[in-house]
Image (cartoon, rainbow, N blue to C red):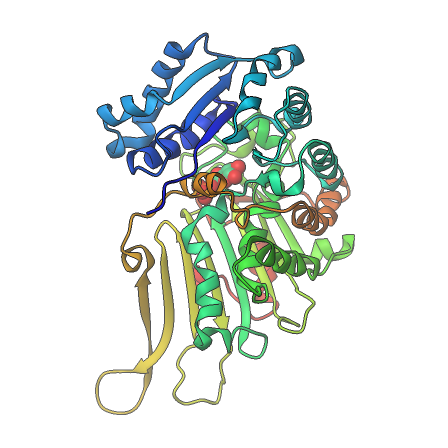
Length: 476
Ligand code: BG6
């Protein structure tokens, strides 16, 4: 294996939830598997700890929790030798002066902004002021990138004043999931699938990300965000891109991103009336001993924020004309599941087909491919019966599966942009989302439909499919 690139990571927001829960455990795992350059260093930047010793003490407690069996004290101690803590208030511009020393480094400097997006522009401006925007500097932006098209444009423009597009890594951690990336070789590397991956053979597609957790301690953030911005604008639309995009001419980052952009630009944009007929929003109510959304901490008592979204989308291009794509996501749903279901067409007059073929690509909890086939029912006579062919992707891969953040961090270190959103893609995704966002802000729009915590979401989501003669996968 070639030596990994050396780097210096400046991690802004190092005492925050994401850094402690995901980023440091990911870096630790990469360190433990010898995937980091021996001299690579991490400067953890935050406000709430006074010094390195205090920071590392808190970090260790968190890491032990999150790493569970992967935690090894000796390895942890060698990992900590890479880390210094810097107390810095990002709203105080003169405090950035200390970072000027890093500008002399000829190694890659990675400024990871795991902070609220309202600080992105100022941090970038300050980095540039102290000389940290030379071509060896990469800047990583965490979602949410804005709360609508305008604010997203504003952030991108502000960051773009100091960094060129190929220095900017916009994170969507779903792109770090192996089972999602696997869609590209699955679709384009296997003529078996590629030849039927279109409107002639596919009846409909379902993309679901269901979570069992509620909003937990994130009420204040969630209540001004909602499921449409938190999940659909990014994770679900990225899943859609990988499912439906055309074949890129190469595996080069921009070839992949160009195809994703084209796909997003082919999405049919809805009028307000179409939003009412093609999208459903829901909010969980108390059930099975779980709180209603409205009774969670930091939620406005009359909140109309959606905790569930289902939508029917159309892609206006020759491959997909007329094929409905159903997206669905929610908190407090019946099971934690993320999957893509491809429902193939069937011929009702075919005596050998008991069921339509169905390919399920599961991202979590398991990473599997399940192909529903027609087989002969055992015994005399010739009758067909459905049977599932299941491929365990993790077992087939025969190697350690990294968590999304570890894989993405290693891509950033290697300088590969393919798993990160380009500015135009992000804005195209917002463009599709905007009519829904605007309609749902209108007081005359139907209120979110209540659904019992622990269920499969708003009943209207069933009707959405039923009128096309379709059903959500868990009901078939
Ligand atoms: C995050 C959202 O982007 O994704 C969370 O902000 C959500 O609300 C999370 O819980 C889901 O990620 P995963 O990888 O657990 O499916």
